[in-house]
Image 1 (cartoon, rainbow, N blue to C red):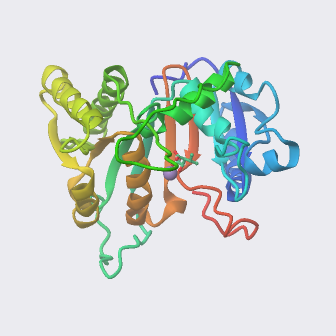
Image 2: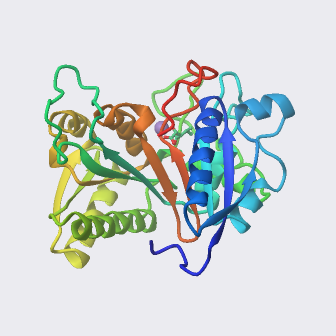
Amino acid sequence: EKHLPCIMTEYRLTVLPGDGTGKEVMAEAMRVISAFEKNSPISFNITEIPCGGEYYLETGREWPEGSFEHCRDNSDAILLGAIGWPGARLPNGDLAGGQVILGLRSGLNLYANVRPVKLFQGVKHKVHGVHKDIWDPNLVDMVMVRENTEGLYHSLLRRMSQKAIGEKDDPMVIEKFPGLDGEVAWDTRPISRMGSERVIKFAFDLAEHRQNKLGKPQKVTCVDKSNVTRGCQLFRKIFHEIAEEKYPEIEINEAYIDAFTMWLMRDPESLDVVVLPNMFGDIATDLASVLQGGMGMAGSANLGPKHMLFEPVHGSSPKHAGNNTVNPM
Ligand code: IPM
Ligand code: MN
């Protein structure tokens, strides 16, 4: 609510259907939007932009020139279907269409990837043999907040945003890895104080908001691998600083990602807001979708200081594309 100025009645919506089933779910989303427009004082000025791996295979471009600038300068919100298509790779090996999703995440500073995991009434989760006959609103109702601008995605995100602002690719760095011979490929995983602080604060603010809305105490769980990696040690240290200094009234918990995957399946009712570094958030939210009825039920918001982009958690799912069977929820 904070982001939307109330006086405006027309919003500029940029629609990026993307690849495969992304196009199918977007067609359904457009029907919801027009039904909404008919029944409210709000309307949308919609610009649809073709993009993604399939578009790249057809045209040699990930999206038309000026698309990033349009998203940046002329969009109150962006709605994305899905990105990625088999065989669609840039000459340097990067995902074709990555500019669209990763370039927007980094170029617009969409640092909080908010992924609610909620089991709606009447929906069966997909954990074998555990479905309860009586639906309990507390069973699965959590929000995962994934850091969205650094971590293991950092080098790719930076390549994408440099392109977006017209700079050249990073020069290749040649290093020797002791003990490793032959061809070596690697990804750096930098985690910064600034990047961690803003997403962790976001998670605590969200917990406060949920506390007021749901009328019950909320807990923020920090998920990382701080027993092993330095970036996660910084992430967890900042989590504790922020919890103690700014949110002493909110309960906290912490878990290593490996054990967390087990607790997520075993005790989903014990989780409220969960904050995770980038790649762990990517993986854990696919797993968590099992608890909410599958990937078709999993939605996602990429939020930054000035922009917002909404998308399903699922990908273009080439296997299902063209059948019009994917859940557009
Ligand atoms: C997601 C997707 C993306 C990611 C891909 C399409 C680049 O898996 O939004 O979770 O890895 O973040
Ligand atoms: Mn993912």
